[in-house]
Image (cartoon, rainbow, N blue to C red; front, side, top):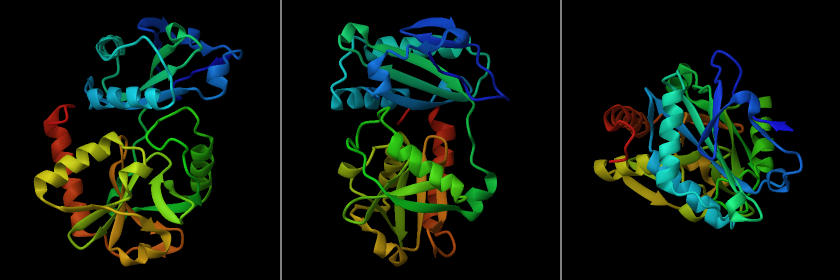
Length: 286
């Protein structure tokens, strides 16, 4: 059996959910004969739960469905049903703040598809990284379905592993045209003056925190352009940063051997605005 385990202490989670049924974590397993799981025929979402509130659940479920459709994963679950199961799961878990993972595994028949709900300890970035910025490396890799958050994550796993081995927070992926597209688990942006630049949406996973950021940009009337970002041009920018569910906005101080200068005021302003928005919105994209 392949076992799902929550992250090790300090948090332990005694339950998981399988197709809406709460079960003890000791029964969380997938058979080794499950070819769909072995081949990565599944999609997933990681949702931040803060004070018992699942942040941007609607957007995460919409992306889960988009991912499933993109790879042809048929199932019988619906959004209202999954929302109810998530609520039941959160109520059952004693901790108020954790990461919630939705794991949808396909099958030959759509009636046999399975959806698991798991909890894990959140991995918070170090405080100093928000003030000083983080280091990144680059690796050549392109995901086959950029808009699908699938279980086929080997390339991203290897890139992330190399980043950690080199003392970096994440690896930035380079496509065949020598352009930066995204991180292994983050979206990336570049800053020049009062304008923010993002790789084209067609080439990347459309992160939920990216959706939140774009709302803030529109409301603040900050310049925003989606353009290809050649690796050779990174020195033309004033700075760069990452976004994700866990990191929010995290400034980049280094890409490979290139160092940016002081964190741009635009980045710091967006960090402040995002923190204020997350405190205000109560988990609903407004």
